[in-house]
Image (cartoon, rainbow, N blue to C red):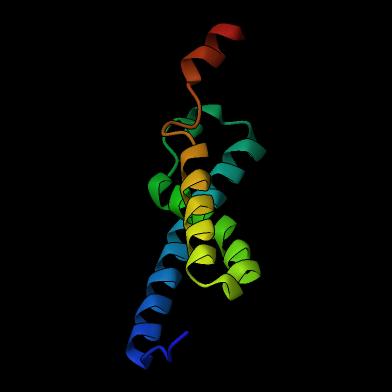
Amino acid sequence: MAEVPTFVFAGVGAGVFALAVFGLRGLADIRGALRTGELTRLDAPRHWLATRVFCGFMSAAPVYAATASLGGAGLFAALAVAGIGYAVATKRPVCPNAIRIAI
């Protein structure tokens, strides 16, 4: 692959850092709700969209690292895994009303 300019590398790095901050905040909020048993907090976790994107990115990073030598096919494989990782995370994590009815 060609040499990546420094400003592009820095810009992508800053974007990934910002995504990681908000994605990890969302995961920490979900973890806290599960630890304390506050299932109503799971209805709308903070930064849920960023958390979904972060999980998709983190699932695609090892795929791209393993298939980088394939060039475009490796990038396509990583993007496919990122899309699947994003799609697997539901739009609304849980419905607390269903839990209240079951209890």
